[in-house]
Amino acid sequence: DTDIAQNLESRGYTTLYIVKPNVSFAAQQAIERWVRAGGTLVALPGAGTADEFNATFDATGQSTAILEPVLGLSTAARRAATIRASGFTDPWSVYRTSVLVPRTATMTFTNREETDPNLGAGAMNIYGDVVTDLVPGTAATGVARVLATMNVAATGATANAITVNAYGAGRAVAYGFFAGFIYYSSANHQVRRGLPTGWDARARQLVVAPILAATPNPVSVNVPLVEALRLDSRAGTAVVLLNWSGAPLSSVTVTVPGVRSEQSGSSIEQRAVASARDAVGNRTFTLSLRTVDVLMIE
Image 1 (spheres, rainbow, N blue to C red):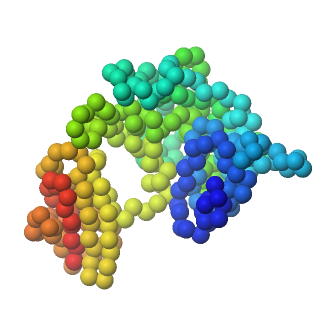
Image 2 (cartoon, rainbow, N blue to C red):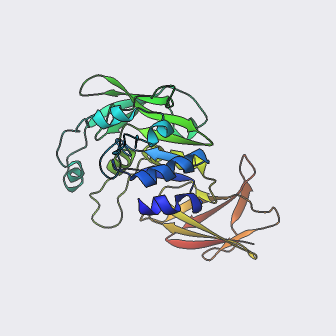
Image 3 (cartoon, helix red, strand yellow):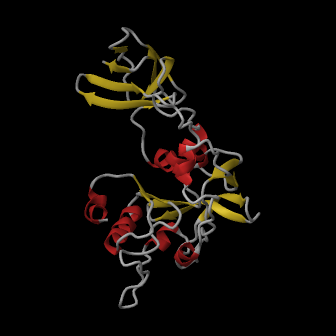
């Protein structure tokens, strides 16, 4: 909280995720200013509903629910809502056993807008805990738009699953479920050697969609579990590629915006690398990848 209060507005961040209920009054003030200036806030269930003293009003009666108009949601509803348990006390224990995570809701998108290509489309199963507390605020505090709703399996009730609210030059996205938990539960964690496998691309999209909408991507790859790091210099561009999939990949396409037409690509493992342009004019480079390689564009 101290780091947010002191440094959020000066470090050039585009997106901030808050995951805990208690966010200090000073940090909430910094977040409000930062979103108003153009930042993107992402709130998980119950996040930012109270200050460091677990209060929504200070001793003078001043509201400390600073994030209510930012999110466009009722703080009172978000504090009062109870988490709908997914059926076991320790949800993370399922990854130490063979028990499957039960489906707790089915989500469908209801409001088509420019961010939906990042979030995905169509129905999607929700696993783990969900809440029914995403209640849009009033005209005075801001009214969030509903992007998706979910049908809760245990009750049959319909609740808001994802909301978005424009605030100043920025925006705030709120989830009624734990997107990271869904992504984690999509993989096979029983692998004895190497990293977990079988990660669900749609679940990953839910986690990173706010970032994709707010942050220009300096480099991207078309294969999951391949990490790419771009380094620019006067001589050209180097992209470090790390293959975390545990198996050699015969074809990986790397998209690198801002590459000039006269520049060509090669790599440490391979000499010339095939190059093309995508639909929006960005240069793409396709190569095989065993474990580690460096794509050099010069």
